Length: 119
Image (cartoon, rainbow, N blue to C red; front, side, top):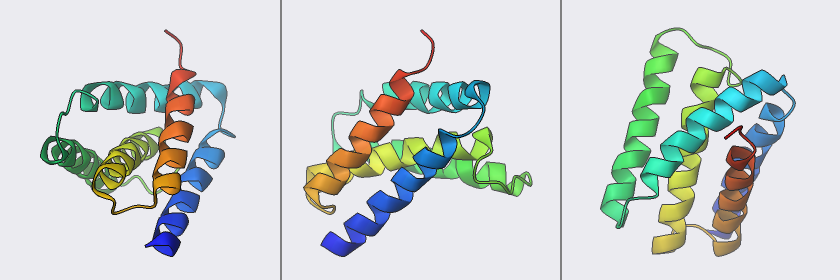
């Protein structure tokens, strides 16, 4: 579990790092879209509800790919992936399927990123 969690954490943090090198307006769009999704997902009071939010983020990403988006740095692709990662981290932290430090690292990084959006 530890190595799988560590690999997943590095993958998510690598995406966030790449997004943070995009132009500020694109970063803001991604942070706003992911942050709005997370704000609603935070209302989930159990793992089953949170899993539905994660599935919705996956469906949104798949729809964007079906529309022809190929770049993982496209805001239409990155925002749902970041939201899905946040949900996955919350679920993994809750049920122990992810290493605690990896899950908390991803949650913290995503929450810091989405908090930087304009209010």
